[in-house]
Length: 604
Image (tube, rainbow, N blue to C red; front, side, top):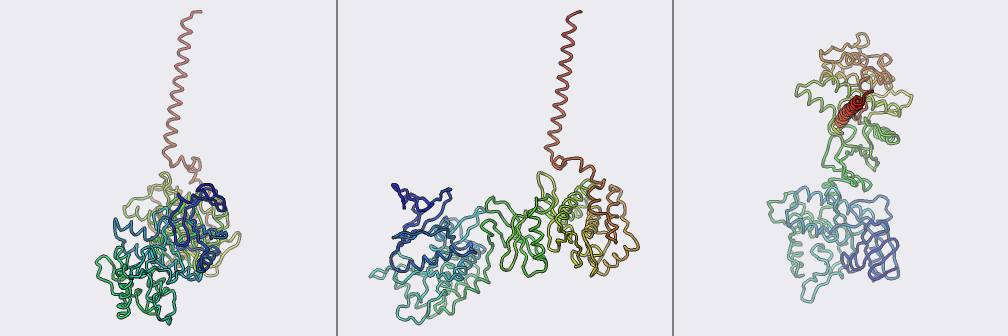
């Protein structure tokens, strides 16, 4: 260890022994430190005194070595040692839970959702430590750390400290040393000196969590007076007689939580509620993927057969995103994951949803995507409710973007198989509506192959998709696009269909009686022409994606750069350019007139 004055350095970490001191612990100081890049960490020094420190060091080693980290436990980055001390380098947290609660209670109480959230986090962190066979045995608000995220959410980190009864300092008069850990959180069996028949287990921490929960519900109050050890003994005796603690009435606390406290602060360990039940009853409100993406399970955006979507955030930029969670056992999960990975490999296309990150977990797969403003379905419903038809220009623009996005998918060998307004999103960018194709849950990577399985939403599905054993390829999505285009033009389906039988009958009728789209008096005739070329029974007779891309209906859009089409700024710049040209032209004319005038003043 190198040092100069108070400046000290251990490996790649440096600190000031006085200025960076956070607290002086019984085993050694806890300090702030920095690595060579300036990143801030926490340094915990553990002196090599006695034997109990070895168990604590072993626990830190397990946390560091474990590949699957949990955000509700302390992240351990490095362990070093010399002859006298161990040096544990961990993430730096802002405060202890005790400090956070004290500050919070100055302004307001915790609400029901917050208490449930904090309780769920403590349970998850504790269960992770149990899995690693790390015993806590000192679960108090002071051993739970708090970290504030960029989105202002609080993360609780369950820490551990292996205690012995001898760690408590009780004066001869029976009063408890305030500098020692407060035994109010310790269960009766930890003080049962006369009988060792009760086996110490993690149920003692259920008792401690019950006391913490009581404090959260009653704004920091203790379950009994803790200044005198005899009072604590009496409380334990009373608890033994009743077996369970009875909460006082609290108008601000839910009965559910008061009942739970009575199931936790129980004399007999075996009668306390179990950790597994708590874990099931109080699932976390959020989770974090790879320390980068915060997923809020309480904010559900949608749910369907292929999974559910939730609000998410990038913890580096605070950008709002979306997380789709698909159960691994669901049909199509692997297929969607393959398609998403295929999309990530190539340069992003503006009209296909942007994929930020994917992760497969034990039970599900998470896909982090950009967040859009609304679905095309909701957008069109709003138009229909207000009885406002889409203008030709907007219909063509939406169609053009869908075609561009799909042709990108086709280039990487993806059939969507479920094109519909619900699977097309709108994102507002610089005042323009950008179309995004989403949801590849029934999609398929086929390259030049064909597929035979039924997929897609029946009303928008092509005839060959609904017929078992009939081969189909990219042309099935042309039919779906034709139905969507009809919906854009008329804000209604091409036909009133109430069930699958009626849909199949309509499909069969197309084989002998081709669909003819009515002409709306305000519509571009090319729109109805395209509908008639898309809603066709025989896939080979439908317009192809390549033909659609070069269709004359898009001529005006192709001749103007995309940003110019939608950004008023460029119109303004263009107007300024014309004005400047006219001014320069006028100046040139004036200059010519001056020259001619000067020439006229000199007779030949």
